[in-house]
Length: 500
Image (tube, rainbow, N blue to C red; front, side):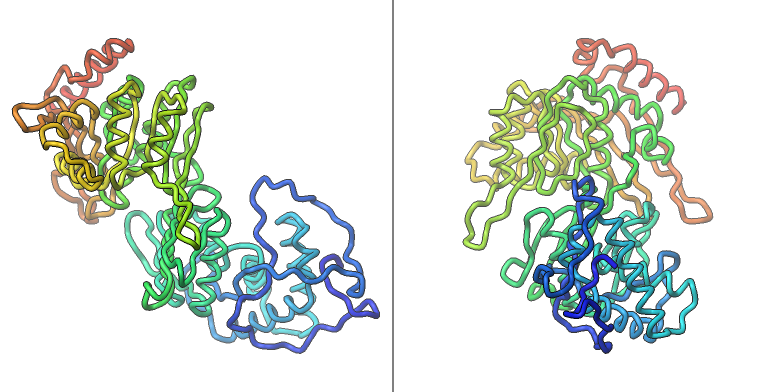
């Protein structure tokens, strides 16, 4: 059978079972989607003529919870799995397996594991055997026990706190799962597999790493010695189906009239800052707004780890780079934003503004790149403006406060505030315009607010989006320039009637 290693006589008995080592076990690397790997290959040669075994960094056997439910598995299950996994590693020829595409490699592993179970006569039900087959395939080819969690589209976050604790967020609420890793080394091996796919590393000398999965999901790893109780892995999952503003309306994140206003804001090239706390849905909202950018516009995105999922054909995606082992070669967000200005952008979108690069983004917004967007961590539109000032000061600019505020007022048109409420729901709580200055004070006006009225018997908050009564926003002339003033007036009027 393809992928098996033979002895000089052409056959090899399965070895005596041994417990798994604590060091990484060789395994075939995960094939990227869409890779051009051959679907078929010649049968493996006998061991005497076979290529030497290629050692590929991969996690050893890891225990895993079933796809359905979070029940703990028995120790006997893990013992059996250890024995089968050890026999598999001694039996299979990983150098040949690496030449297969993921589906063929998975089928090959399943065939060999079935043979091992039959030869050693393990007492297992069909369901247990199927679970074992899936677990071992995930260990060799995927992300081990994380695979069933990554496959679920209802999970927003996966939080691994060391080898023995795995939490998930579902419907805005955090719950503990029955999944666990064999040990901390096992967990670190899986983290190394994830970050190495995007050319990054995590180890004792570089214990903090931001990365992403192939689908764009955000990954953060912090390893010992900084993480005292074992490696901490956090994955912010993205839904397979990209959300739209119409879906956010169905979820109650914004009213239909409010969504119409946001569509117009995206269409008429307002400079937008999306403000909110961690997990409030800033990146999701930014993705939704970009859907209303004209398809003939040239867009350049700058991110620490590429998460934005723009649908426009003329998009250039840029990503920062951490320093190498010698501490050199780092490319910061500020470097990317500066370089954008030389790439003839029509819109610049910064995934998350954290530092002095905000000054360069404001300069771009104020010098002909209307419609640029970015996200900032803050709890209200007013705090967002204060944070922008603070981040400019972080860059060492010795500008008078009034000058900084004039730059902000001349650059930012709209601040959209997103929030995650105490019941776990996500809502757009403010749509606020930056109007101008009176003396040294920045003047803002709210167009849309979210009012909480109470909660139902299940503890879910009840509220509604209301208009503040402003009939002509500050960007009215811009809307008229793009022929959208009638839609804007109709949306604001409909919101007024709803409030009445």
